[in-house]
Figure 1 (cartoon, rainbow, N blue to C red):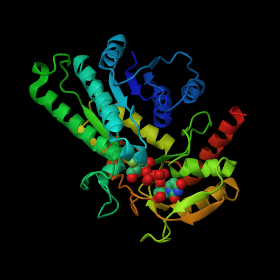
Figure 2: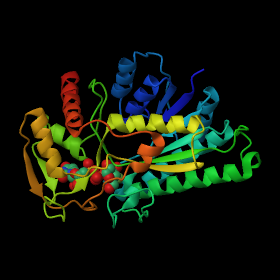
Figure 3: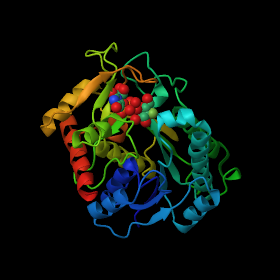
Figure 4: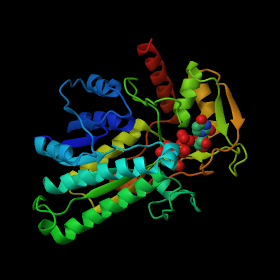
Length: 357
Ligand code: UFG
């Protein structure tokens, strides 16, 4: 029987790509989402790409512990990948209670259910935001975490800690604290620290669906290119970087999704070296905002309306990953070129324009 993976937040941008890759790798998947920040477009896209009309979909609020328990009773789950969380940095500064409540409660409920129902493995979607503004680049998993610049970032740090503590406790105290775990040992945990996920599936059937004005760079670019936004503001041209604009590590969403498949296999095939592991998921290649904009123009053969604007509060000058550990231990490497990725982002925006006509 295939192993079954629960993808919480599975109808969203990252979740839908991960569900697709898992199914294509031969896993059974349960997609669960409260639909607070998406519609059914991406889930339907996953069905089309995989040719699977029968993927179980559960609409669920992960902050409701009873519903989460029921979900784990209804399905035998071998591992859960937890995406269900709010993710807008600026909004989290305005509404910290909303962010702490949602992002922490949902994760605690998942861990509780994982403990009760056979001790399934847990993969947490973390972020490079935990490194803050690093002293040394690129960042490795050993680079120190810095105090979070936003409540959103803080929820990522806290959830990493909660997962690590839970994994340790189940190893140490076993069935006495966690009667549901199987004889195979403790809950295992992996945190994947994403850099900047961008792009869309090559089919253009799934991609990012920002509500309202996008905060992130690439959806803002594609919406400007299609005429939904007038002009892209490049925030800051006087950073201490080669061209004065910020540098990031932009990781193709399909590559990112494949890293999850590799991490799940590592957990389920008992290949982990520690009960709790962390991996940077990035390319190792810094790219400036201006370089990204110019590449987007070139590969898609268009001119983008952009201007330089003041720095955005909270932005750091530069961050990129050292992905060596993930390359070695997960046998995973980012493979798609930035050109392919930016073509796919533009194809997705055009697909959206087509279906919303
Ligand atoms: N940018 C612009 N104009 C825009 C939008 C973004 O110039 O309209 C610039 C930003 O200033 C930054 C770069 O593009 O230099 C990337 O910005 P994004 O908002 O796309 O991504 P961030 O690096 O700010 O955000 C990422 C993740 C978040 C995470 C955050 C932590 O998307 O989930 O890092 O810093 F919380």
